Amino acid sequence: MKFIRNLLTFFCIIFLFIAIVFTIIIYSGKSLLNKENLSNYIKNSNILNMDINVIFNLEESGMTLKEKIYNLGLECNIPEKIVVDILKSDEINLILGDFFNETIYYLIDERSKPELSEEAVNKMIELASLSLEDNINIMLTDEELKIYVIDYANKLTEIIPDRQVMIGVLPISTINSILNFNINYLYLIMFGLLVLLVLFSWSFYKLIKYLGVNMLVSGIIFVILGCMNNFLNSLILSQIERLKVLVSPFITILLTIWFKCGVLISFSGVFLILIYVVINRIVINSYESK
Image (tube, rainbow, N blue to C red; front, side, top):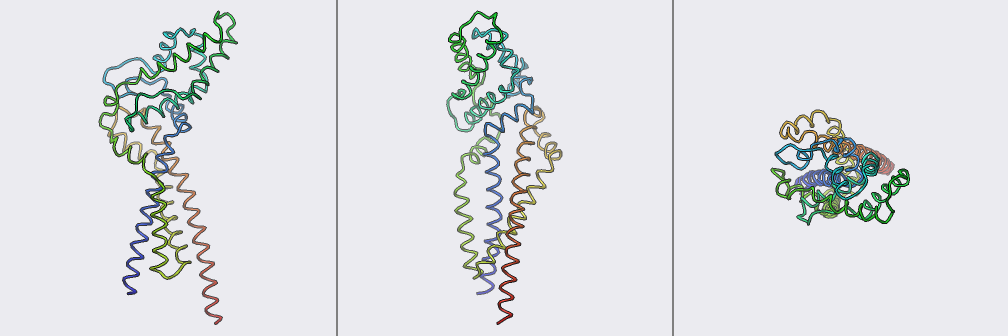
């Protein structure tokens, strides 16, 4: 019976480690695709100056994203100086972050073509209004400009090609599964494994050791992976050379998230191990005193 309990304890520890690793992967995947990280990605990748056909995985060469957005603004009757002011503002990264966030979920969830959020549209209207105030020679009312900007925001989605064209060979079903996975299931699994560990080991305080060691090991693994930016970039990008400029900043942001998670989890693991050592020493001393 002791051998069986030890064997079951071992398997529970392994499964707990796997659950912690998957929790970090899914959490980091969801965190990667929030508006803030996408805004940083757009800033770091200089995506405005990329060929729009590279961004959307098209074959022919074309104009840059900045040129496309610039021309679209003029087509919507927005004065050139205002379009230029919008494109050179820092807020354009936040607006495009919102745009690409919606585009990604359009790809993986088979939604209708994305639209800018109300927050992003209002930010663009605010930028345009500030530019209009600075350019007093532009004969345009605030209301007219607002109508043009709203039309501009709506037409931005027209630059996005068909979903199947953009997907190409990407493992979209795997990405979809990760992003839509309910992480609460993993928390329930970990809780169940912890309960089983208490039953199999007949010790509550040993549970702290098992959890602490698992967190420490998994945390160290993700810290190491987070420090391997150059190696992993070279390894992954060698398979998708054409999208190198586009994908590389994504990998860097993901590895940064892994590094931060790894540091936090490994320190938490060390803390739990120290608690176990203290409790274990108290138990031993109590036993010896008897």
